[in-house]
Image (tube, rainbow, N blue to C red; front, side, top):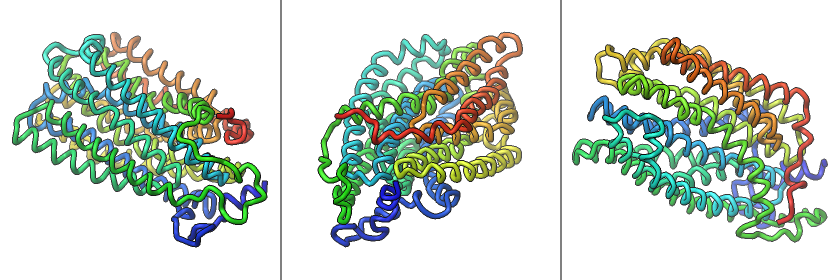
Length: 489
């Protein structure tokens, strides 16, 4: 066990163990050393910034059509958002699940298997993206009808969704590639690519809408083009990065499990391990989006003005939860690498530090929304601070701003369980969360109005956290060892 720790943390912090050439491997594996809290925060920060840019990426569509086209155009994009965000979260959750296996191989020093896990993830999710893109392109109008989308925006919403689904393979590939960079301990490259693609997306949005009058279809085309270019650049950079890892570092000849490991393009054994982590991870990442999708029909029943305000509120919510979700994802990678190096005591120290990070972000979000909630809604709706749409969005934020710390605690606790490969309990916890949100909307909205949709949100987050936290306290997650119990490929 001590031998595994030494290999995981000290192959060579600045140079390649065999050739002496700089490879950057030490930087990518810094989560195995130093202060757990500081290392976790520094790793999470680029992820937070990157995901903020990704939300800005998505939010730009709503802001531009809301300000320059009109309220119905905002409602059309908002009607599509709850559905498209489900697919975004499927991609992110799948990538996180796959990255757990990759991170554990990295922590254990098994570079050949690590590379195989990367290739397996990329091929699998490219196929999934293509299949879901075809399904969504064919079924988008029918899905919108099932969600009771108002008739006056059905055509525009269908146009946006059809174009969006054509670019779904790019979306999947970019998110999987970003997760692979994070698994290697590199959260800066995805950030740089997101900044680039976000700026490109906004530029194209404005060009297509203002210069060509393409409205909703224009912002959809801009999104697909920006995502496609980001995916291609990410792939090229990742392939270059993988060359920096040796499969048989000098001085480890006594470790039989590493000596003859071959790199494969695809491994069904690794895929099976990934699926066991990825499915609960997809559920955990998608819970908010699936909840939004399932309650969309409830909101739609109140008319397009309420839908426009709700859409503005959920877009701002999606920004507010980014620090929490990103910190949870960082905890997952931190846990996976340290579990691969057989260091559960370091995971516990990182988890304690993550509580402080989540609480700090919760207080910051509360302060910002208390000072600028109306301005935030006004960025989407050119109403002068009046009207049903504006008041709906503002009421949404005014209530929810007190509870974002709840999703932070949920995310970091789920992150430990997911990173360790202990997924059964937190899967059930997330299902309970989803059930509370959906039941609250459908049962209470007819009685107390659309506010029931957001009253149920913090209740679901809190119950989810409590269930996962009880599992964490048992310590059974620390007994898992994915990279040694995986089925043979």
